[in-house]
Length: 86
Length: 151
Image (cartoon, rainbow over all chains, first blue to last red; front, side, top):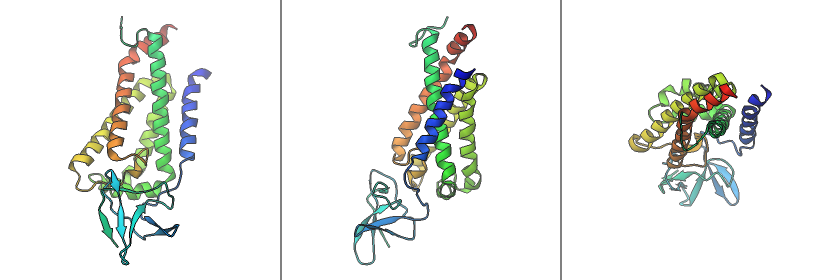
């Protein structure tokens, strides 16, 4: 009886541990750019089409930036190379 | 007597235990990831093609269904049901990703998927792999069950 539950319990603990160590929370209504070493919120979600390319945004000043899902360098947003104007 | 690449029933028993372990990890991990970001998950589901209109129901129904699938593996009487239920769920998810890739006008961010860093195509392969694994579990369960009865 005890050993029957051992594997499922271990699996459950592993899964909880894996999800607890999950990195940054991603805001579904907000994207970010990295400007001067700081993450700046764009105030909107960029509708990038998820292909094996980058997601770009061009601001009014003509500068082009890569888009991030969260204020974290590991959260670069995937796109199809399209540059979205803001 | 059933003979297969898994050979005798003790090998199929190990196989079923490994499949069950991996599917419990998959379902609980997926459910907790969704439940801990419930608001974002709700918003993202609303942006998904074909199912966006049902986001109000799906954002809680999906994690609950995944938890049920995981807990079916906790009891030997419901293990087979867990394998079948997991196969059906994985088939549905795989079908949805295929529809998304081939028929949707715009493909949303894959960050609501089980592994946010995977693209939709990578998710597709991951799901197909898990589906085949669950299906093999269903196929070899009778051998495992026979062994359990007589051990």
